[in-house]
Amino acid sequence: MLAEDTPISKKLKENEDQLQTLLDIGPHNFDLGTRDLLILDRQCRIYYTNSLTDGMIVTLLITELLRLVHEMTQDNHTFEHIKQHLVHYQVEEGQTLNIIVDKMLTGRVALLIDGEDKALIIDLRHYPGRAPQEPDVEKVVRGAKDGFTENIIESSGLIRRRLRDPRLRCELIQIGERSKTDVCLCYLKDVANPGLLKTLRKELGSIKVDGIPMADNALEEFILQQGWNPYPLVRFTGRPDVAASHLLEGHVILITDTSPSIMILPTTLFHHLQHVEEYRQVTASGGMLRWTRFLAVFASVFLVPLWLLLVQQHLLPTGLGFIGPNNHNYHLPLLIQVLIAEAGIETLRLAAIHTPTSLSTALGLIAAVLIGQIAIQVGVFIPEVILYTSVSAIGGFATPSYELQLANKLTRLFLILAAGLFHVPGFMIAVTFVIIYLSHVTNLNTPYLWPFIPFNPTGLYNILIRRALPTSVLRPSIVRPLDKYRQPKT
Image 1 (cartoon, rainbow, N blue to C red):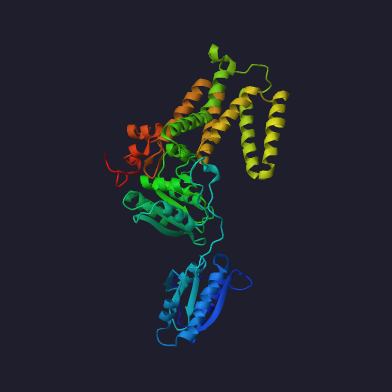
Image 2 (image 1 turned 180 degrees about the vertical axis):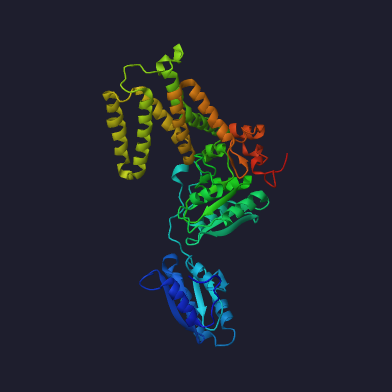
């Protein structure tokens, strides 16, 4: 490794030897390339990374440099002549070999000149990747069909396209001693809370690790340190319109290179229940969609535990007796049946993820017809267990946040065990424990159950009722924005 801040030598040969020792350019690193040039009687060498640069543009760069041989003569300003002759839009100077190596490994081209103690760095990055497309987990019927990609430049550009505000800031930070992953801290300067920005900069700067190949998820674990808490403390989204909306509210977002999703900070539990489809429809329809989603999420957590509790303890009212088991001669206890069904649905979900798309339909038929129906006929399950666990699973799939869906699944299992083993007292204690636990969860000094706990009537109203945009004058107070008005007061 090079010593920190190793200066560039005026002798090109010394620089070549150090870079060759460090990078091992040749058979052991086929995607690192060099090219020697003689420009204005000066020996020059170009360093680049084949896999991160566009070969055609590198060829054009060399062509432009070779024109100097015929257009100029040698003098004491060779470095400036070459710099001014470069037609590329981003050219900077590097003073150390460490900077040369870091920039080259991000896709830039470095030009070293004999007799100069600085280098020219030309931005010719061309990252491999895919075109922006709508995220699979956040699809809408009517709305934008673009989405973030693994390219941090494209992702930040999708936000810039929606917020053409000169006060939008995109700070670039490198994390990882080996990976040197680019992370963009994005916010509105006159809206975002300075205390929040200071905390995030401090947390990002304190990360000391060799690399973050898991991108934004690794950042979440370092910044929030949530431990064994299953509930998501940040919101992930792959939609630029969602990210732009949160920036206007005063949130801060983190864009991580190589990740097709961005992190929104800070968030509460109710941020994970929002979906862009609600705001792509008229107010009444959006409100209906929101409440339907609320009911689905509630059912995904409480339906199976409540049914198991009422059936086991014979607490069903006479008018609701039909929802209980019609056949009481089952072979396995209801608690065991429910747990097996939950495990089966989770296994089916994992199998669907790892099954090729062309075979997913066959997988569904096998699960629904062969396994489910035959299991009922054999006597492993009663039909009611399959019904209610399936409805609960559908409610989980209706949850907008995948991370919240997994957390709710763990909570559901906890409530099932409490209701099945300890009956009414166990169920009530378990529900109380969950509420108390979530009320004590904070992320970046933000209460997780706000505006329910602590109670905020305006915030709760905005969550329960889908308000029309012209009537939404104030930004959410939970982010403590510098400018609390998003439009002029009427």
